[in-house]
Length: 312
Image (tube, rainbow, N blue to C red; front, side, top):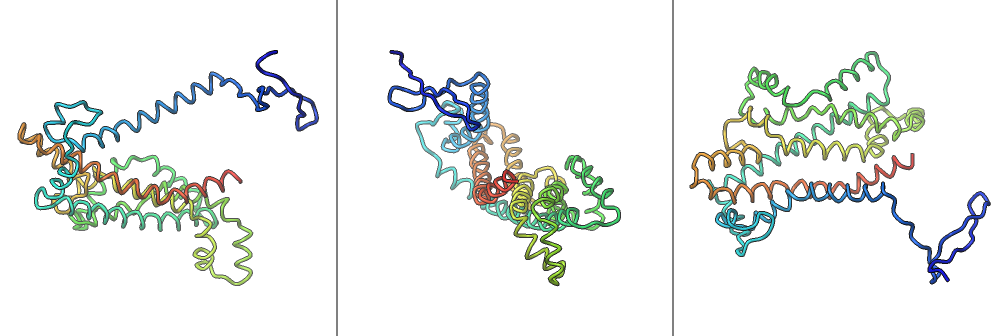
């Protein structure tokens, strides 16, 4: 008797086929193909590659200055200085880290909310209204998506300088309100997610355009809005070059520029500045935590949007 017995089954079209079964009656697993094995290995390598820097950051945040140079890079030291590093990070330079966190939250939330509102209105208009110059305007929008933000920093600086807004919070917030990629995403999603028949029915019932947009279109666009909001939030939170050029007062720095200021200070001070590295590492770890919370909070909206797209 062989280890595996076979049983006869019926295909959906009526043709019989043979199903391999185990002596206990369960179906035997098919051997994995080479392509599937390569895919799984690729996923494992990708997970390790992207998770490794975060693992190093978490491990290094528990070390003192001496342990950073004497213990293994990817494993914990004998001492545990995690809470001491937190206290030193928030106490250094009279607690300016608190100010940088508040500035980053202010810049990111204000820019993300404003950019999402503008992108939603613009994307909805491109998707559901027909007006003269619509195709040309959308082509210009697609061109703007391809332009790197760093290329626009110096022209933006000239504009802000003429307006007298350099070294103010508006020099960071106002440029962050423009999000061509967000307009594009809302336009693509809104084409299918908001049926024209529903809008026409609302107009026949006497609803005005503003009411149609706020009470009918916005709930249908919720997954796209959540995506644009998170992208805008992450983009502004991680923005470095624009605040570096626009702001010279360290009390207006976001976390990215402030931590870079500490890095430069540690480099200038030589061996004495090495004591700042645990603060830099802890500050970098704390800067990531709000983004993880925002991602987890909006994950359900993304999943509902993906499921809706899969059904369609």
